[in-house]
Image (cartoon, rainbow, N blue to C red; front, side):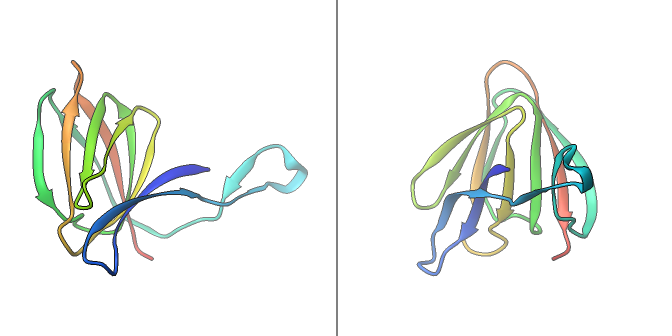
Length: 118
């Protein structure tokens, strides 16, 4: 399963990395799934068009699943990426300069945040 990782590198900068979360077939092979992870808190974040969150590290290691809307995420190495409905991001930039986030387009950004315990 493809997703984007945001992490704090050994160079002191925050970076993007495209990753593939391994999936395996279920018994009988009816569908694919990832291994399980322990999760803590979950929440939905809803921000209006034009909302901007300046530089901040993630408050915990977390998956963010974009439910609707779109956002532009920036990392300290200068790269930006558009994140759209259906995209999954693994935020692991819990220290360092963090990232920015701007809601783009004309609709609210709705994202499910799932804090990971490991």
